[in-house]
Amino acid sequence: MKKQHHSSSNSQPFIDMVFSMLHLSDYTSEQQEQLLDSFSAILFEDLIMRFIVQMSSSERTEFYSLLDQDISEEDLISFIKKKVLDVDRATQEALQDFTKEVAELGALKIH
Image (cartoon, rainbow, N blue to C red):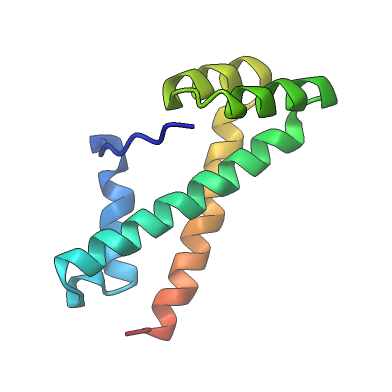
């Protein structure tokens, strides 16, 4: 699958919260970018797993077939929106869980 890296103004409050909770301003720009890329990848994988669980067996097979075809992120999102009943709820739950985990990490003040 082709991963496209882009930032959205909708994600800025989330990014600001992560920076604050994990004291990312203490890191270099390169380290910050690496951490944010890692967080994005973790969140993306969590979302995909949540979506897969909601798919029927045949939909999962179709989904895996699409991944084998190296489809674009937009095509993948379009498929998910057609096959997953409540994408918004699953996304919100993933963000809430991730936010909780980030807050717990921030409390440890890892440097």
